[in-house]
Image (cartoon, rainbow, N blue to C red; front, top):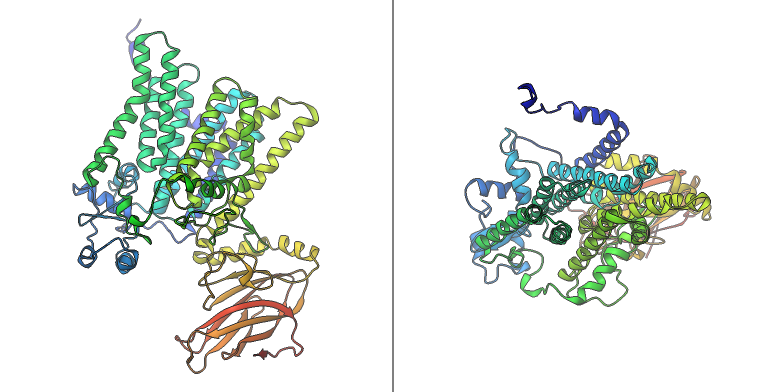
Length: 638
């Protein structure tokens, strides 16, 4: 052996470039998804501002860590601490609003986060080393989301090639689309807050771990990869406690490896690699909780300052499970002709049974089986998969099922962002079942399975993209209304065609404004939309009317002043931005019918109050009628 041969091999720095050149389509696809994710965060009122100190929770936690303590630097108002019950939502409401302490945990005179510390340790603290100020929350959410998505695609590719080395690229691409849009990530990105930071961090670390596990067990056991997977899952628990479910799966893998390995030294190596890092992280999290709240299992939720008193809520009840399963799996979204056409139904609750009295924390949500019916393909996995791929797919299905049950059992409500914890696991398992089932068939049956799976994926992608435009609070419409209007017009041929096919009668398809929780199809009057409205809204109000052809109709409005003595000169203003027409009506009326000229397609109508800053009107009903008998005038009726 020569001296040269004993030198360590130089790292191949060009290997990533060569890999990218040989996988151009995959790189372009992932880049496109990344651009979509980045736009979703950016267009939701969360631009990336650098060189400043952020008031958000994880940047504050990082500041606390740098100063050697576990609480936030935000000091509670002395009057809040002195309240007889500082957790009373009515008493602490003013302090939560003024200090921005909503959902923080107040304990012994300090504010803490009940969310895990992992995002601060992995992202927010390291970012402080750069001369750019605090890490914007939106940027952290984007990075966690995108890296997690890329790892989920890598897991899918690695397992799919074990199913069939020559799996068609279009099938992998279709399944990757489902992972991009059907996993609730785009919806979650529409709001950049501490909740989304923790959830996307848990998602990212879980799929990093899964990729390391899959590749660490293929073609021989790689202890180093297993150790890094264990570390990633431990950190995932530090971001989302629900990720303890896949973390416990490491015990199953360790037992399986030890039982099939004869060498005692290798058995110890495998067990330590799989269980050591996650155990260390678990002990560190327990010590972190004990140092803050005196108990290793206390995350601080019982000390939250929220819209409810934690002492009045009972977590962990079997009675929560049925409504939880309904909302996470079966709750039907609301389909309308108003862009973006698919809407998640907010309260009042859509659960068909009788939910427990305390079950009152349901936010906007749609059932996964309605939004992403492709996940039903997961039922084919145990029938068509074999060997290690079958075990991997079944493990993901089991983990997802336990997460759904655990989340439903623990909480007295449900919300869409929690579906990030389990949706991608089911999509990967379903994709593996679909690929294996399709490729095992021939002729017409194979084509039907391929087209059927593709159609289900297309439905899920369409629904996922649609709800991503709205998010919880119509983020795109509020923060980038120009883009919203552009997309509304771009997609207007669809509702226009459907309106023509349905009798060609103009339809009031959308009502939006203050007091409205979500968009929807109000039918003959917007009050008929169950769950979309909290009380009669105060103007301004935006109506969307779809017409299959140019028409003249009447717009019936029931509006009343918000005070018994409205300011002099208060008037109702009706404007149509598309035509530039404006009508001004007296404010003292119960019902008024005004003429409305519609063009073909989508028509926007703005209702507002004029007459000074104190002039306010409340609309109690609005509907389309036949055109008034006198064009260009308004008719009021008591």
